[in-house]
Length: 474
Image (cartoon, rainbow, N blue to C red; front, top):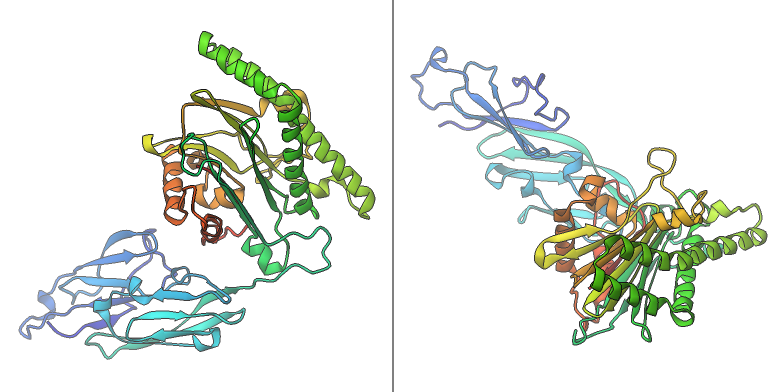
């Protein structure tokens, strides 16, 4: 066989939707070595187009009648093939994931130094720590094995993200990250649950120097055995939503601790569970348990709204809608051999119960939308405090055990589930739980669990750079 020769103009790429026509491509044609073969004896060969972006293979006929062997078309580099880089974060990219090492002869990249990166020709790795913000043109020059052909390709490949702290004089300041863990039963001798929570500012907020709008609250009431977990996502369009989410979570803690201490809530809920054990009346159980949740939930919302209204008198030109936030709450306790789990939500995000051992998961909320596409609802929306509205948002579940109860804002649910269909798919939740478990050691005596969860929340997802808050009961 003769040396490879390069043809980039003889391929008819039009007319097939299986080829990304904006990709940079080079065709390698293998020619017969036998000098006795004439051009007339040669037949057209199939062109195998390997589209690495879509993972498809398309067969086309070569235009050149002189080709008698397979011609392979390799996409060399495209903008979305190179991972985004972040200022002051180590960057690592293996060129061989795009170009087969067997096809590489010499290979050179220019322009990396300006971005604080370098190309290691021995390992075929682009690496380094980007040192400043910018978009850089990178020159790609290559020789395929056995071929003298080389070509320069200019690609706009790296975008660096800024990490700018909010102004020091910002009204209602908030830390860029927050985390907390509760070790209730370190050795699981009482079969109780532990909790870990983390919240981090989104890359889009960091780029613009804006504060984190998310918040959370987790606590365990030792005298009664009740757990409360909540996450809140302040509306990005509301000026002071970071304070709105903070106030909401504070009111959740205040109201439920008061409820547990000053009312017969615990005894009444236990009676509901005991009654269900005798009569197995699903409707009565759901109705009675839901009714016990209405008053504390209404107090949480109304007291939060009252605090927002008070702030409007202190902050010039502000209104209650400036403090808008979503709300996801889970109130649960072990009663005899069962866990009763009460959930409530306003807006998007997700709550789910995962039983990894059985491969089963259930979504315990109904994410709701606003009047327009892409809009969600907030606790400042009209009608939220109506009794029927509150009752209609409560879900009650009674289970023997579970591996994880998970609450998340849409900064996590959007990139990890992408659609409502996926959000209600048990397999997706099991996959998510196992993914998190690989990065976060979910056991009681893990001193690094908060750091691990914060690190997990730094995952990369193209187009998803919102604040991220995640609570896991395990």
